[in-house]
Length: 400
Image 1 (cartoon, rainbow, N blue to C red):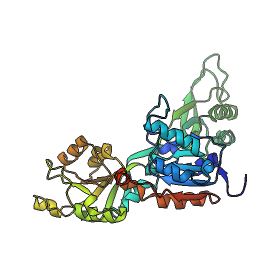
Image 2 (image 1 turned 45 degrees about the vertical axis):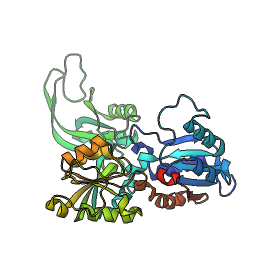
Image 3 (image 1 turned 180 degrees about the vertical axis):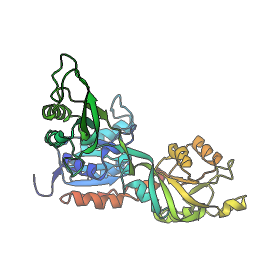
């Protein structure tokens, strides 16, 4: 491969290092959407939406070696055909003909720590963050728990044998185990051949309970090693499947516990500066005005004096369209929810439950992250030219 060139596969690997695709919502369509993993790449263009203008600019130079990372997946719902007369089909055909690849990280980039959602929180205020819907994961080596009981004198031998077979690996540590001592009892029948004690007599032995994690793949070898090292004719063996653990930093949406409480207007003004939009473009829905869904300018006085000075300590937020997270955010104590857009019934539920809403525009709550994304991606693919699409803009701006 010539200097300054990579492959679609290596670019996809870099994308996943920033935002593992396992974090994407189940309904999403992320990863490599168009292209051959083996194709060469020299140039990468970042965009929120894949449009004709973006494709045209990206393909103007080295088009066949240019990959586009489109935050919103251009292929989302199942396609029955890709045909020119259909606008979406025509767009996909042009992308396939003109570009090396199209990759989408979408909700994986939202959910990851220091991704789009955490960036959006910087425009709301400072404080501690927790996911509204936490991602759950479990290292593959810790998917099972193997438990046995053995004479205490034999535990070291059993632990070492199980470790060699792949058990007891947690992060950077090996031979991890838990032991607790007690008394075990058993009685063999006439056909037994006990290695400890005699058949037909109740035996009591000072034993240790040994617990070690294992991967599902290593489990058969771990059990075989346990049996071979155990002194009993019939070793007691228990196997438990372990549940995934919720993440404290990754997942969909965020709850921001503000270090300084602020009013809806104060937060809205901070957000406008962060997103670089006019304050008039921010839509505010106040919980004390449930029948009023007009676009209210920041600073509009409420009918309730209390609402005008109400300060929010706990704020829910989600870039793009986060209305589905509102009920959970309210359950977690949020009195304000910040997102791009919401459906009508989601607005009604929010105000009915006493939660103010700030709507700052779907792509407006996402697009400002692209320069930060470019910097991080460029570090991982230093040989490629990474840029932000100059003509990526909200639909209203494209129509002017």
